[in-house]
Image (cartoon, rainbow, N blue to C red; front, side, top):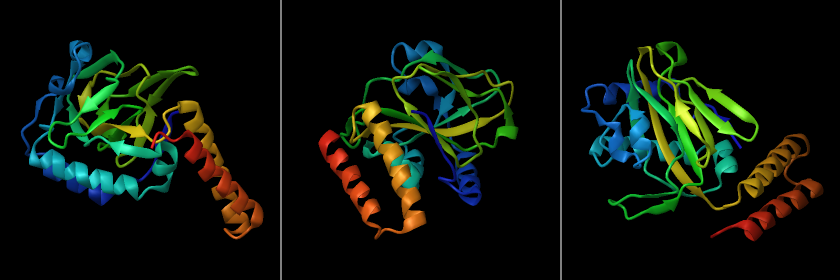
Length: 227
C-alpha cells in the first residue's frame, strides 16, 4: 500500500524549515545507512542527534498526528525520530530495502520498520531528477510530490532515489511501527475507514449502519493489533 498524504506542512511552515536548515552543517548521509545501503547511498543529512534535527523532527511528528489520513493509513504505534536529508547534483540513493529494525540510542526507542515515510521539503520544479521510485507487486511507482506532502510505503519495498541533475532536493525521512503488523490487514482497515468517513459525510455519525461499521472497524483493530 502506497499512500500520498497532502499538506502535512503548509507552505509557510516549509519555508520556515528550509530557512532554519539552510545555514546548518550537513554530514555524509551514509552515517545512518545499513552496511548494504551505504554502498549505494550518496547524499547529505543533518546530524540525527543534533538539536536542530530533533527540534524539527518533533514538529513533524506533531503535524503527522494532526492528519486524519496519515493516522488512518499508518495506525502508528511508534514513530522513529524524523531525519532530514539533502540531495545536490550528482547525489543519489541506489536500489535498497530499509533496515528491518531501527534503534534510537538517545531515547532508547527500538522499532520494527513496517512503513517508510518521505516528507518532501522542496517543490518539484526546484530540482531535476531525485524521483523516489518504489517497487511493489503492482510495478514501479515514481513519486515527486509538492513540498509539505508525504508518501507512505512499505519499508520492505525495493526503492531508490534517482540522481539529481539540477537544484537541491530536501526532505525528511523516517520509519514507523504500525499497531497492525500485517500489511494486508492494515490495507483492509484503511479501506473500511474510508468507507465509514464517506458514510459519515452523507448520513451523519448517528446513522445506525455507520455506528455499526465503526464498531466493526474498532473490533478489527482490536483483533489484529500488536498492542
